[in-house]
Length: 392
Ligand code: 13P
Image (tube, rainbow, N blue to C red):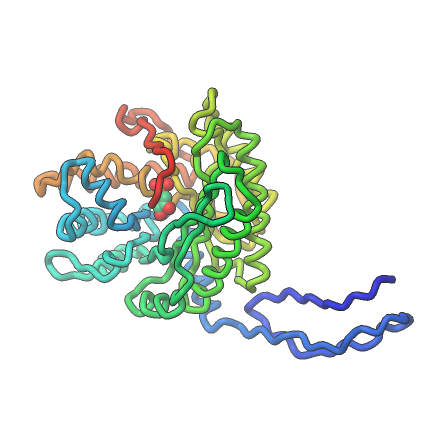
């Protein structure tokens, strides 16, 4: 019998494992080295993390993602002719975060650092506006994408340096969950190096977030770019999520205290045929069932450039039969597009823009419950928003 020199013990971060030593195995001529199994201590935040994740993954609710970096927020503002200034970003975020009744459909809001520390023009902290609506404040903690040397023109996500101390500060400011978005490109391969780097970075970030009281949203976005069929997306998504879960386990991340933000499994944006919501639901749920343990409380999809109506229809199709996890949304573009169009940067349009947000939030809430119909949706909401090589 082969002599194993390495004893690997996986442990949940919510348990203590005592020290043990291993001697010679009975009946074996192979002498195993005496070794100590490391002690893994329960994180002080474990119970709170589980509670936070459950509250975000509550029936009929999902996440409003408004964590655009200043550069990306500038693009949103430019689409309605506004300059990318701090007061304009604040006015836009104020409109979104003070929408009356938003908490009926929205359970969490992901903010950019600037917004986490901002207040309304009347001086009320944005985090308090959210708490009053029973919405959990979240924070984007990654520092964006840069080229990955040695890869096939792919990228990696920065932000681990200083993450623990930043997370402590974000928690003090009221954040209770975090987001880290890295990307995988199918047309670029993806290379084994890029997938491993994406998965390892997400796992390290998740462990650090949990250690500081923040529920990590794990987001390896598989970009829509490419002309590949849906089968190829399924193959890549399975590979990526297998690796992500391998490293999450290796880093002793508590699965009950994370949320996922996957891309839906669709054909590439430039593929000759479009897939129906039923097909997308079938492929996406197949991938999730094969890769995601039921201990994970919530799957909060990104919209990735789909039109508002498409993203909602696809989510609705995924909720036609019960799932082991809460299957919901964490949309940015597919919740904001109609709002920007209604607002146009004018104070007199704020109410109409907030109504537009409630229309989209309610539609996705119904889709989370499997009860949405696209009847009566306007043409604007059906327009796709795909942009090649989109950054956040
Ligand atoms: P969308 O793909 O829905 O625009 O959002 C991406 C994202 O990561 C927002 O937090």
